[in-house]
Length: 617
Image 1 (cartoon, rainbow, N blue to C red):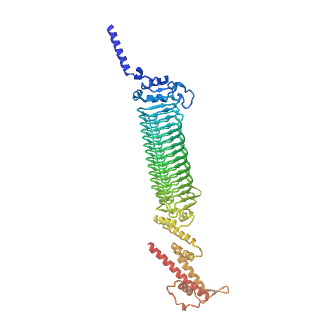
Image 2 (spheres, rainbow, N blue to C red):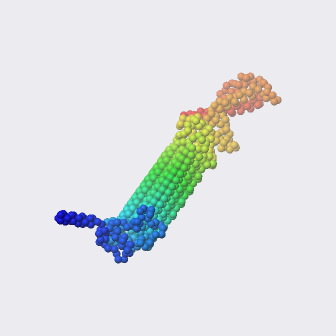
Image 3 (cartoon, rainbow, N blue to C red):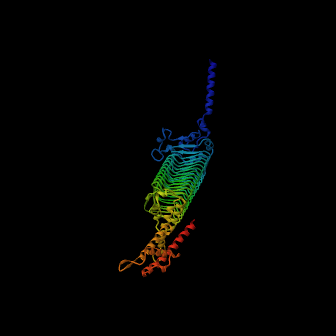
């Protein structure tokens, strides 16, 4: 029995040794590195926990995060939570840093009333201070080999990260508050930058910064001043969404390797200035977001540009010189004061549809679109300028609504085709078509519309007459097998040309005669009618004579009158000997001379018409 007792005791002692060896260093004698004499009791306690590889949480008695002491409220913050910047600086040096290097500095609920200064420090481990209260932070040119985590903290003043180098992620999120400026110009972050989760900032500066992951200022965060990220380079996405609010956003010359996402109810009360922005993916400015003005001058977008889902741009969407590899979608009930796309290039479609509203001008002169342009489905417009635009697809103007006095300028534009409907209000009050060329009339069927619709709804809405739109439409109608409509269009073009000539010019009278006799060559049956009318009047003048206001029979028989009248109208051919007919009165002689002139004119017009047919053939 004695020997058995000694055996049990020996096994128990061995177990104690093994457990002790496995225990953290701090749990065994403070990890062998004592606290500095200058430290306060609080700082010594913090060190004892950190050197054991454990975080120090001043809120350890709270059961949930919601019960933690609020760093944004001064109440409850006493001396027991106070740490000095000098304390943290000592932890970054010998003999403390080698111990922490295996773990990190992880504090929660600490109070730095004198601020925290780690500028130009080289830190070989993560630095985390969550739900802390800090009177300003200076980390200029610091190098941190791990996360820099300030989640939920309140920084009273500025956070300075100019030229800092973070080898992992930056967190100023989860309800953090920076009452001053988060100044991170030339910051380099190997991971991502998270400034979301309802955090608040006065200003954020990221000029010339480089981020290897993503930038997120989202989930209801607020930047009461400017998010200034000119020249920023982000390898991933930029999220400024989920109801976040900004006074101004500057992304001039910024490069984004993923998407730019400012949507889901976000608000930019001032200017979103992204001139010369480069985005590999899509740009989303939609889902009910609101903007004062958006500048995308000279921007380059590798995917789509979407301002949709009921978003509002109360000022101007200015995208002159924009290049978009995909489509531009300004749809789904979104609203704009003005849109500028002068000289822009779109690889997909331009869609301003599904109930969107442009209350001012959509100016897209010299726009290039590889797909179609959609101005339809209940959207409303006042002025749309597509002067000199080049559109490979169709332009859809069906179901649109135009304000009184609205206009669509298609002068010098070239499109693949036109798609509209028969409703008068689908087209604006003024339609400028001089120099406009298109390859097909896609919808509706011209045979159902008839020439009258084209003359009134399409060609009749220009401010001044120009023959070009008539010729272009007639060419398209001929190509589509609608020669009757083409002829009517050309006839009315000639009519308008005649009306444009002053009455005092002989050309006007010549054209009127051409119209009367041949219908400008498009109604040749009129020549037969004119010939018959001239012959009948001549016959009547020969057969009857007006004498003392009474018609009296002459010596002309019916046959003689008919033959002589016909002979006068065919001056190139002699049908009878003039001496074989009865003597004519003076009035009959004058009319016979007039008949010869009419005959020559009819002959010339008919010869000209036949010649034009030969040329066309």
